[in-house]
Image (tube, rainbow, N blue to C red):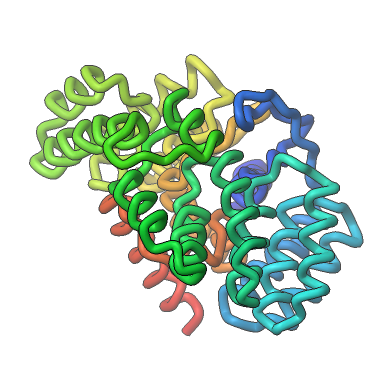
Length: 354
């Protein structure tokens, strides 16, 4: 990949790495707990150091990762990088230094859910269960889609001898999480989790809808998949991502292209359009999909995974790891489509490292 396409790939790797912290060129409006926030731009040299840290972290080289993250922070302070620094310091048993990193991440962006999620994980490791519960609750309030924060909270409840609460929370949130609805946000934000309540109902409907779409895609019934997605009011970029994961390249490109043309800020559509163009060996469309003067809205995790495959093929593991959280990449995904692509990306990274 050369010229504008290469520069755009680096830009999109940055988008994926910084999505949870709201770090987009020129600033981007994002919604956290119903409140609009604008995130800052991350400098390319800070991104490059971050990418080195992400790769080191994925390989378990904690000291190297911490050094790279500190180098990135010397160039620009950012909540995401502070969170990752805290996580690797915690892995080394440096709890006080990790807490300082999390505090600085909070100062950089008090609405960054990843800071609270990693703080909760670190507190759980240190058996500071009250701190883990507080931090995981805040992470879930900021990002109801964060299943890692949910898992941390469940484990902290169990270790605190609050098994009934853990079971209730686990039952209430069973199944893949869909895009947060007002009901989901309200239930999590108020910490009122009741088995069989509104949250469970809000989550079950999207799960059934996704299953119908996936079944149609698996059978190659593309019109049926499109109709099922429309009836369930699933975002078209979500349909495009799942179609691409099932290998329906032309279908995915058609949908993603339409969405991106209607809203160039849709990060998922732009990534799927780019990944589809790469798979079709369509360099002009790849460049077109990546090049846009407007800031991108955060892409979905599945879209980032699919584009990570593009970066892995073209730029190597470091660029790909900047697209997806290295810790999340190692963890099982309950969404079967995300899990299939996650395993594929991990396997490809292993081959690239050999």
